[in-house]
Image (cartoon, rainbow, N blue to C red; front, side):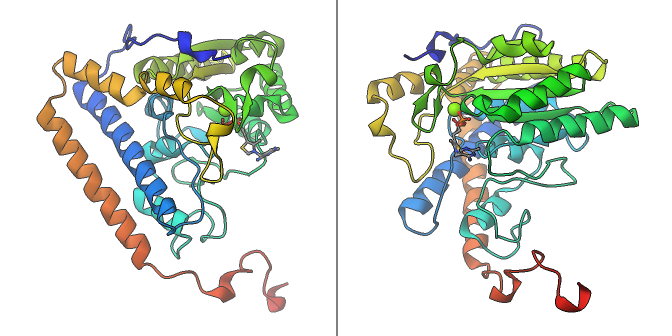
Length: 341
Ligand SMILES: Cc1ncc(C[n+]2csc(CCOP(=O)(O)OP(=O)(O)O)c2C)c(N)n1
Ligand SMILES: [Mg+2]
């Protein structure tokens, strides 16, 4: 059963009033995330890195959502799929490459943690934990703190649809609903939790259908439409900032690549299904839209691709040249030195 295919193929720009510069930044961010991600797959296949968990296919919802936030002000509890999201918030391709190579200078954990466990205090990115959905109650805590402090910061938490089967999802959203917290829960519904399809995770057609049980708003959006995603998050932000409480936003999308570099997706889905979804790719759709509007041209695409390639090349070269962290750092700051204990 392929449930997300019914979503539209047209870009829905109703009510979107963005400058050309911003639209082009969105496009660049999507291309940048895609090319960086594709390079990472190549590095894995070359045996240069150990692991990759990819965000390919999710750039529309992630860039749309991240561009709607007040960057560096609102809080984001991201999950491993959110490379494009993290890049828009300020995470750099070089930092990404340091993380996949496990090299010194990796900013989130000193190269101890697996890649894709984003965290950056200045960028408002809260540290990610590996057990899925634990970020939902954590985000409710952050949103409660903002509310108690009288700030108008909003906390956005993201997770996959499979992760909504975890108790943490219900506990976090229940709390957020009870206290009308300034929070957005963004579910990137790509139909699969590794090999488990959505219909084996829930008996409802939409994750957002569960919103009423928390007493909050629920919204379904086409996650392969960057502008519709932007608008859905913008509206949820306005609701949250004006005291209207949390929103559960479900973005329908698809993961056209395996779950991670350790997965073989041929065992649980057909190639026809994957090919069908590739026709709805968010980058191609937005590119066509921008070309039709005369905002983008062939020359500009070439220029953007060239700029992105340079950035990815430089990031990779810097990470390859960087040293590994010294072995004696492995236990620091896990354990305090004996004389400080
Ligand atoms: C509590 C917990 N159970 C299992 C896992 C292993 N695991 C990692 S990702 C994942 C699938 C999550 O699927 P979904 O939430 O749909 O996100 P997607 O990967 O599709 O973006 C699982 C089961 C985990 N990390 N944490
Ligand atoms: Mg999923």
